[in-house]
Length: 312
Image 1 (cartoon, one colour):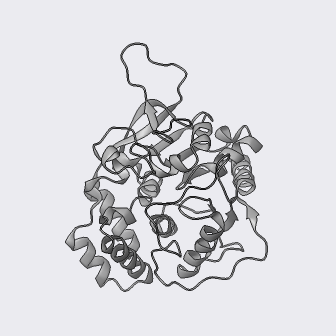
Image 2: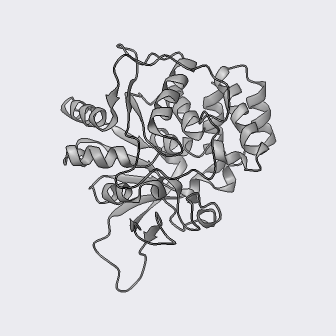
């Protein structure tokens, strides 16, 4: 649900130009998510091909070395909160997601207009693309990841989304891919649970009233997803999580980051997918990769950016 709303926000944000969108196996298999991409593009009347369209690609059925984890949250059988949106026709040919990423990265780098890549799901596609093109980190401008929990806000622990007490879902699903990408040399911004599940993202009564009064189809979809989430006892921020990563691309002034050295646990029985941060004064490991982790935000402005974009 939150990935779908983030896609809508990206399509509607004036200073972003969406070139391509790919699916990855995470909450649901990549095949189901690929169909949902086209459902959202159809909702927004955006063609999936042609000069004004958005290229699409499909990832593989499972993480790098594991079976796909069962999602304990559930986004509904359709992955869209049972919104009842009509299925869209698929293009006659389906691009493989890592190939599409490498192709676009090379093309835009050659044109002097390097991509910003926003990763809303597990990092499987990006890890595979990095294997295909070891220069990927140099070809793209930056990589913004919705992932990790860095211990910078209490919400990082309270809202752990992986299937253990300390992990975040995207890193939990494919920790090997997350580790490879963190070590891949990217200019990497990580929007983790510290900000993406913060209580400051809870929709106010006025936010909900505005969304429900808006006649646009995408606002109605957002309200349907909101009802699905809150009807199951979860908080309203759940539908806004991934839009925080889009905001980091479009409005970086809204999110405060800090440089941290960290890595991802891949073998721990209790800690699979945990983001391990080393902030020690002494004996700090010098070999851990650096990321720019979101530690705070102008939450009223961030929330308004998302809500107003959905209504625009």
